[in-house]
Image 1: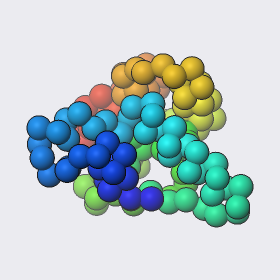
Image 2: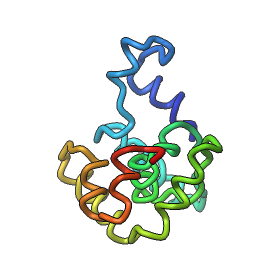
Image 3: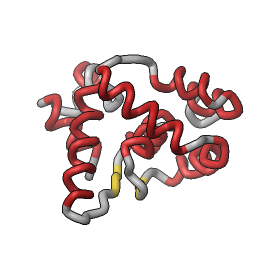
Length: 131
């Protein structure tokens, strides 16, 4: 799944318009639910889902995608080092339960801040990407 294009179609915006792209968050509950349902439907058919796009290059996006159940992510090379620093410090099961909880409850929250609270060892990486 290409999150850049999917996000553009989901919101019905031109992602090259800087005034509009600020309004299109990949970490909003409706968009995350769409991804969750796509992954669940694919799994039901025995299909693995991979992600490419900027969402995977953002630490909070990366962790949320992992929590949704996506195991393969393509991202810009500059983001790989940050994700490699994050992976050993997270507890995937905790991320999965957290993502399922926020999607079920429909709570909108600052996911980066919540991940930083859950995993203090990587807080600065999640809140300040590229750190």
